[in-house]
Amino acid sequence: MKKIIVLLLISCFSFSSCEKDDICDGNTLTTPRLVITFYDINNSSTEKSVTNLSIIANGMEDGITYEGSTLINGSTVAIPLKTDLDTTTFRFILNFGSSNTALVNEDIIEFNYGRENIFVSRACGFKTNFILNTTDPIVHTDAPTADLKWIQYYEVENRTIANENETHLKIYF
Image (spheres, rainbow, N blue to C red):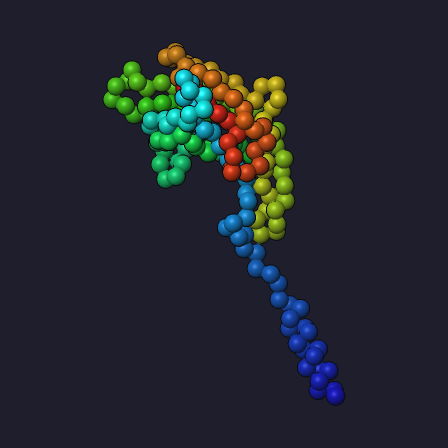
């Protein structure tokens, strides 16, 4: 009987020292990016692809990388917002790198938002959700070298940025 009790105690102590692995599952939702979909200004229900769009964060030299490229050719893009500030500014440069400089057009967009840090798990840490301001969510200006704005109109589709499964901002050009 003593042997059985000793074996049970030993097995209890050996299992009590085990702990869960601190590995964050790749499917865990983390800090979402702002999803932008581009639309045709002449037909507001039709998505429109941008051509060689480069989106460069304020103070950076290189464009953000989206789906393996710094040049975006498509109708949807997801861009990161700063998690330590309530504003992020990007230069949206259409036809970036074109040999015909007359086709290159730059607009500046400043995103204004609030942040909500949410604890995910010990392994994954925190994620940040964003909520675009109600009064001035976006400040849209032309480049310092005026070339007329290529972005004609924008519409905030969803102020809360909690996942990347929906469009948050529509841009018409």
